[in-house]
Length: 465
Image 1: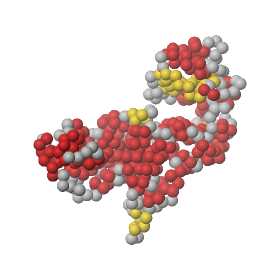
Image 2: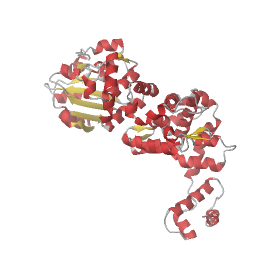
Image 3: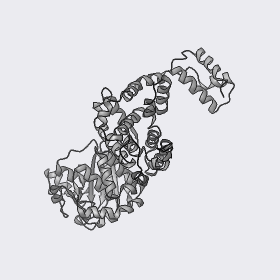
Image 4: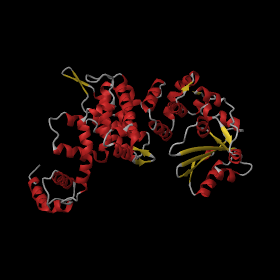
């Protein structure tokens, strides 16, 4: 902040605005990454660039036309913007909600250690009343994304949207479809990072926003499911999301895997996305294709292939939201395989081959899928996922076997592609890969332990079609 005040010069008059002021008044501590917003009468882009150079950070020109630049430092993200009007009061009146339309003169704050809050829209009174109100309902029309932000802030702060703001959000909901996908994605990811994402998504639904954000959920609303399911598909999916919220918040209770699971779920998938929000999105979308695959067969309702079709729908949604490619891949794989644990549990005995192929197909997403299976199972009847965990020996067994499988996978392969081609007289192509996979499986299951045994096993496969 001192670098901002110094580089802004005497005529710059920078002010700290928005969420940082709000959270300081509320006594809320910042998270692992601090977000700061500074507004200046003019010259924000140049100021942000010079601050980045001074502090050896990264400069990102977010919106050159409107004068918005970002400075990225370790643990800090600073946005610098030009006033959105002829004065500070006009700038604050154009912000999304009154509780964010607060400002503190930065230079005075640094020199004196404190400064009065500039509050032209009544934001402090709204903070005291714990309500969210748009300074002018036109700010929602001007930027419909603010409707999503209102729902997120309501959930994050524990506030309540005012009646007039709720009506305005419902009115602008259809316009959300025209907002840039990248902006929607960023707001959605912040919502998926909330400890109670399901509550926020239910609020999106009541305000008419969920169906605009994810049109695929609309047919889920009226699709009933046979026993043992107690709820239609959308209600089941929202309960699965709530179960995922609870499981992720209490991974430590999944003894003895909690610490390992937490480290795994914190893994970055690109673009600042970790595994947590992808799992939550998979919980919401795992049955997205049930409405279109619903069939009545001999008097019984079936959803044949909804996992395969659902994976295609999930991939399309992830790509539409501009999620990182790896995150899209994880989402697609979780939806594609979400029935696997149930199918394994339906067998009389889990064979070594079935176990191996489960781990082989899911690979590094194995733990995510087992957590999804836990959330899904709980949502069938509305049970507690932690209670289901205590009665789920298969899930515990598969989680426990994951590390063993990692050790098996780490072993050097007994044969390589050139061995297969030379032994079987094959040219490079898919047949070589299939043969290698069969030998690798035999090695993992302990059926071949030496190169000679692997070659002999390869010979036995040569007669296969």
